[in-house]
Amino acid sequence: MKIDFHTHIYPDHVAVRTIAAVRQRAGIEAHTDGTLKGLKRSMTAAGIDISVVAAVATRPEQVSSIHCWLGGIRQPGIETMATTHPSNPLKSEQIKSLKRRGFKGFKLHPDYQHFFVDDFRMYPFYEAAAAQGMFILFHAGMDRGLPYPVHATPKRLAAVHEAVPRLCMIAAHLGGEEAYEETVAHLLGKDLYLDTSFVLRKMPRLFLERIFREHPPDKLLFASDSPWTDQREELNFLLQLPFLSVQDQEKICFSNAARLLGREARKGSVSPAPCMRCGMPF
Image (cartoon, rainbow, N blue to C red; front, side, top):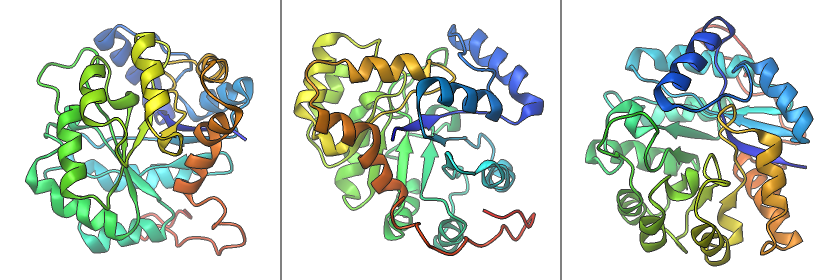
Protein backbone atom coordinates (compact mmCIF):
# COMPACT_ATOMS: atom_id res chain seq x y z
CA MET A 1 0.00 0.00 0.00
CA LYS A 2 1.02 3.60 -0.59
CA ILE A 3 0.01 6.67 1.45
CA ASP A 4 0.44 10.26 0.28
CA PHE A 5 0.61 12.24 3.52
CA HIS A 6 0.19 15.79 2.17
CA THR A 7 -2.40 16.74 -0.44
CA HIS A 8 -4.84 19.59 -1.04
CA ILE A 9 -8.32 19.77 -2.50
CA TYR A 10 -11.00 22.44 -2.35
CA PRO A 11 -14.80 22.48 -2.28
CA ASP A 12 -16.16 22.04 -5.79
CA HIS A 13 -17.68 25.52 -5.96
CA VAL A 14 -14.35 27.28 -5.28
CA ALA A 15 -11.82 24.82 -6.73
CA VAL A 16 -11.43 26.51 -10.13
CA ARG A 17 -11.00 29.94 -8.59
CA THR A 18 -8.57 28.72 -5.93
CA ILE A 19 -6.40 26.79 -8.39
CA ALA A 20 -6.22 29.83 -10.67
CA ALA A 21 -5.27 32.14 -7.79
CA VAL A 22 -2.45 29.91 -6.55
CA ARG A 23 -1.19 29.33 -10.08
CA GLN A 24 -0.99 33.07 -10.69
CA ARG A 25 0.59 33.85 -7.33
CA ALA A 26 3.13 31.06 -7.20
CA GLY A 27 3.80 30.46 -10.88
CA ILE A 28 3.20 26.71 -10.59
CA GLU A 29 0.89 24.43 -12.53
CA ALA A 30 -1.79 22.22 -11.04
CA HIS A 31 -1.88 18.52 -11.92
CA THR A 32 -5.53 17.98 -10.95
CA ASP A 33 -8.58 20.22 -11.01
CA GLY A 34 -8.35 20.62 -7.23
CA THR A 35 -11.50 18.61 -6.47
CA LEU A 36 -12.02 15.38 -4.57
CA LYS A 37 -12.85 13.58 -7.82
CA GLY A 38 -9.69 14.93 -9.38
CA LEU A 39 -7.58 13.70 -6.48
CA LYS A 40 -9.13 10.23 -6.66
CA ARG A 41 -8.40 10.03 -10.39
CA SER A 42 -4.80 10.99 -9.66
CA MET A 43 -4.55 8.36 -6.90
CA THR A 44 -5.78 5.66 -9.25
CA ALA A 45 -3.24 6.63 -11.90
CA ALA A 46 -0.42 6.71 -9.32
CA GLY A 47 -1.34 3.54 -7.44
CA ILE A 48 -1.83 5.44 -4.19
CA ASP A 49 -4.23 3.89 -1.71
CA ILE A 50 -4.70 6.71 0.79
CA SER A 51 -4.29 10.47 0.49
CA VAL A 52 -4.25 12.76 3.52
CA VAL A 53 -5.95 16.08 2.80
CA ALA A 54 -4.90 19.34 4.48
CA ALA A 55 -6.81 22.61 4.65
CA VAL A 56 -5.78 25.87 6.31
CA ALA A 57 -8.00 28.38 8.10
CA THR A 58 -6.91 31.88 7.13
CA ARG A 59 -9.55 33.42 9.40
CA PRO A 60 -10.66 32.13 12.82
CA GLU A 61 -14.32 32.00 11.82
CA GLN A 62 -13.48 29.43 9.13
CA VAL A 63 -12.28 26.74 11.52
CA SER A 64 -15.62 25.12 12.35
CA SER A 65 -16.93 25.01 8.78
CA ILE A 66 -13.60 23.66 7.49
CA HIS A 67 -13.82 20.81 9.99
CA CYS A 68 -17.35 19.97 8.85
CA TRP A 69 -16.23 19.93 5.22
CA LEU A 70 -13.15 17.83 6.00
CA GLY A 71 -15.28 15.36 7.91
CA GLY A 72 -17.72 15.15 5.04
CA ILE A 73 -15.09 14.18 2.48
CA ARG A 74 -13.43 11.55 4.68
CA GLN A 75 -14.02 8.10 3.19
CA PRO A 76 -12.07 4.96 2.33
CA GLY A 77 -8.85 6.21 0.78
CA ILE A 78 -9.23 9.78 2.05
CA GLU A 79 -7.97 10.95 5.44
CA THR A 80 -8.12 14.55 6.62
CA MET A 81 -6.21 16.80 9.03
CA ALA A 82 -7.78 19.36 11.34
CA THR A 83 -6.80 23.03 11.54
CA THR A 84 -6.79 25.94 13.96
CA HIS A 85 -6.11 29.67 13.75
CA PRO A 86 -3.37 31.44 15.72
CA SER A 87 -5.61 34.32 16.78
CA ASN A 88 -7.82 31.87 18.68
CA PRO A 89 -6.03 28.51 19.03
CA LEU A 90 -8.18 25.54 19.94
CA LYS A 91 -8.31 24.63 23.60
CA SER A 92 -7.84 21.20 25.14
CA GLU A 93 -11.54 20.20 25.14
CA GLN A 94 -11.93 21.27 21.50
CA ILE A 95 -8.90 19.21 20.55
CA LYS A 96 -10.30 16.20 22.40
CA SER A 97 -13.58 16.65 20.49
CA LEU A 98 -11.77 16.65 17.16
CA LYS A 99 -9.93 13.49 18.14
CA ARG A 100 -13.26 11.82 18.96
CA ARG A 101 -14.48 12.87 15.52
CA GLY A 102 -11.64 10.96 13.90
CA PHE A 103 -8.95 13.58 13.32
CA LYS A 104 -5.43 12.34 14.03
CA GLY A 105 -3.56 15.60 13.65
CA PHE A 106 -3.43 19.19 12.41
CA LYS A 107 -2.01 21.18 9.50
CA LEU A 108 -0.68 24.68 10.11
CA HIS A 109 0.66 27.12 7.53
CA PRO A 110 2.40 29.93 9.41
CA ASP A 111 2.88 32.07 6.27
CA TYR A 112 -0.79 32.02 5.28
CA GLN A 113 -1.82 32.35 8.92
CA HIS A 114 0.66 35.12 9.75
CA PHE A 115 2.39 33.77 12.82
CA PHE A 116 5.90 32.64 13.61
CA VAL A 117 5.92 28.96 14.41
CA ASP A 118 7.79 29.53 17.67
CA ASP A 119 5.40 32.28 18.83
CA PHE A 120 4.77 31.56 22.51
CA ARG A 121 1.02 32.10 22.19
CA MET A 122 0.93 28.82 20.22
CA TYR A 123 2.68 26.72 22.86
CA PRO A 124 -0.45 25.91 24.89
CA PHE A 125 -2.01 24.58 21.68
CA TYR A 126 1.10 22.52 20.91
CA GLU A 127 1.09 21.10 24.43
CA ALA A 128 -2.62 20.26 24.26
CA ALA A 129 -2.24 18.53 20.89
CA ALA A 130 0.72 16.56 22.23
CA ALA A 131 -1.28 15.53 25.29
CA GLN A 132 -3.85 13.95 22.97
CA GLY A 133 -1.20 12.16 20.93
CA MET A 134 -2.02 14.20 17.83
CA PHE A 135 0.57 15.27 15.27
CA ILE A 136 1.03 18.70 13.70
CA LEU A 137 2.12 19.03 10.08
CA PHE A 138 3.82 22.41 9.64
CA HIS A 139 4.38 24.07 6.32
CA ALA A 140 8.13 24.70 6.39
CA GLY A 141 10.36 27.08 4.47
CA MET A 142 9.29 29.52 1.81
CA ASP A 143 6.00 29.40 -0.05
CA ARG A 144 6.30 30.57 -3.64
CA GLY A 145 4.72 33.96 -4.23
CA LEU A 146 4.21 34.81 -0.56
CA PRO A 147 6.19 37.72 0.87
CA TYR A 148 8.99 37.38 3.37
CA PRO A 149 9.65 36.78 6.20
CA VAL A 150 9.46 33.01 6.26
CA HIS A 151 7.46 32.16 9.38
CA ALA A 152 8.49 28.49 9.77
CA THR A 153 12.21 28.17 9.19
CA PRO A 154 14.00 24.96 10.18
CA LYS A 155 15.67 26.84 13.04
CA ARG A 156 12.32 28.01 14.43
CA LEU A 157 10.85 24.51 14.04
CA ALA A 158 13.82 23.11 15.96
CA ALA A 159 13.06 25.60 18.74
CA VAL A 160 9.48 24.28 18.97
CA HIS A 161 10.78 20.71 19.06
CA GLU A 162 13.15 21.56 21.87
CA ALA A 163 10.46 23.37 23.87
CA VAL A 164 7.73 20.72 23.36
CA PRO A 165 9.67 17.49 22.79
CA ARG A 166 6.65 15.21 23.16
CA LEU A 167 4.83 16.93 20.28
CA CYS A 168 4.77 14.77 17.16
CA MET A 169 6.01 17.26 14.56
CA ILE A 170 6.11 16.91 10.79
CA ALA A 171 8.10 19.48 8.83
CA ALA A 172 6.76 19.65 5.29
CA HIS A 173 8.89 20.00 2.17
CA LEU A 174 11.82 18.09 3.72
CA GLY A 175 12.31 20.92 6.20
CA GLY A 176 11.56 23.75 3.80
CA GLU A 177 12.04 24.72 0.17
CA GLU A 178 15.21 26.76 -0.31
CA ALA A 179 16.14 26.09 3.33
CA TYR A 180 18.15 22.94 2.75
CA GLU A 181 21.35 23.99 4.53
CA GLU A 182 19.32 25.15 7.52
CA THR A 183 17.44 21.85 7.54
CA VAL A 184 20.71 19.94 7.66
CA ALA A 185 21.97 22.17 10.46
CA HIS A 186 18.85 22.18 12.67
CA LEU A 187 16.51 19.27 11.83
CA LEU A 188 18.53 16.41 10.43
CA GLY A 189 18.55 13.44 12.77
CA LYS A 190 16.06 14.97 15.20
CA ASP A 191 13.08 13.02 16.55
CA LEU A 192 10.60 14.59 14.14
CA TYR A 193 9.21 13.74 10.74
CA LEU A 194 10.07 15.27 7.38
CA ASP A 195 7.70 14.90 4.45
CA THR A 196 8.78 14.94 0.80
CA SER A 197 6.03 17.23 -0.52
CA PHE A 198 6.79 19.49 -3.50
CA VAL A 199 10.60 19.53 -3.19
CA LEU A 200 11.43 15.87 -3.84
CA ARG A 201 12.36 16.39 -7.50
CA LYS A 202 13.41 20.03 -7.06
CA MET A 203 16.04 20.11 -4.32
CA PRO A 204 19.73 19.71 -5.20
CA ARG A 205 20.69 16.05 -5.31
CA LEU A 206 23.44 16.56 -2.74
CA PHE A 207 20.95 17.66 -0.09
CA LEU A 208 18.35 15.08 -1.11
CA GLU A 209 20.79 12.21 -0.70
CA ARG A 210 22.14 13.55 2.58
CA ILE A 211 18.68 13.93 4.11
CA PHE A 212 17.62 10.42 3.09
CA ARG A 213 20.87 8.90 4.31
CA GLU A 214 21.17 10.75 7.61
CA HIS A 215 17.57 11.26 8.79
CA PRO A 216 16.01 8.14 10.35
CA PRO A 217 13.93 6.25 7.75
CA ASP A 218 11.28 5.81 10.47
CA LYS A 219 10.83 9.60 10.37
CA LEU A 220 10.32 10.20 6.65
CA LEU A 221 6.97 10.41 4.88
CA PHE A 222 6.11 10.26 1.20
CA ALA A 223 4.00 13.28 0.28
CA SER A 224 3.27 15.00 -3.01
CA ASP A 225 1.56 18.34 -2.24
CA SER A 226 -0.95 17.40 -4.96
CA PRO A 227 -2.28 19.15 -7.00
CA TRP A 228 0.97 21.13 -7.07
CA THR A 229 2.96 18.10 -8.16
CA ASP A 230 1.90 14.93 -9.95
CA GLN A 231 1.42 12.04 -7.53
CA ARG A 232 2.55 9.37 -9.97
CA GLU A 233 5.72 11.21 -10.96
CA GLU A 234 6.62 11.94 -7.35
CA LEU A 235 6.10 8.35 -6.23
CA ASN A 236 7.99 6.87 -9.17
CA PHE A 237 10.91 9.22 -8.55
CA LEU A 238 11.08 8.21 -4.89
CA LEU A 239 10.94 4.49 -5.64
CA GLN A 240 13.81 4.80 -8.12
CA LEU A 241 16.24 6.50 -5.72
CA PRO A 242 19.23 4.12 -5.61
CA PHE A 243 20.15 4.85 -2.00
CA LEU A 244 16.81 3.66 -0.56
CA SER A 245 16.40 0.03 0.42
CA VAL A 246 13.16 -1.85 -0.09
CA GLN A 247 12.61 -1.65 3.67
CA ASP A 248 13.13 2.12 3.62
CA GLN A 249 10.69 2.48 0.74
CA GLU A 250 8.03 0.57 2.67
CA LYS A 251 8.49 2.76 5.74
CA ILE A 252 8.48 6.03 3.81
CA CYS A 253 5.56 5.15 1.53
CA PHE A 254 3.34 3.33 4.00
CA SER A 255 4.15 2.14 7.50
CA ASN A 256 5.32 5.47 8.97
CA ALA A 257 2.15 7.18 7.79
CA ALA A 258 -0.04 4.26 8.82
CA ARG A 259 1.37 4.51 12.33
CA LEU A 260 0.54 8.24 12.53
CA LEU A 261 -2.96 7.63 11.20
CA GLY A 262 -3.60 4.72 13.57
CA ARG A 263 -4.75 2.58 10.69
CA GLU A 264 -4.32 -0.76 12.47
CA ALA A 265 -5.95 0.55 15.63
CA ARG A 266 -9.04 1.53 13.66
CA LYS A 267 -9.81 -2.01 12.54
CA GLY A 268 -13.01 -3.13 14.19
CA SER A 269 -13.39 0.16 16.08
CA VAL A 270 -16.71 1.90 16.49
CA SER A 271 -17.60 4.83 14.23
CA PRO A 272 -16.47 8.20 15.58
CA ALA A 273 -19.06 10.64 16.85
CA PRO A 274 -20.88 12.96 14.42
CA CYS A 275 -20.26 16.68 14.25
CA MET A 276 -22.66 18.37 16.66
CA ARG A 277 -22.83 21.43 14.42
CA CYS A 278 -24.01 19.82 11.19
CA GLY A 279 -24.76 16.20 12.20
CA MET A 280 -22.41 14.86 9.55
CA PRO A 281 -20.76 11.53 10.47
CA PHE A 282 -17.00 11.67 10.75
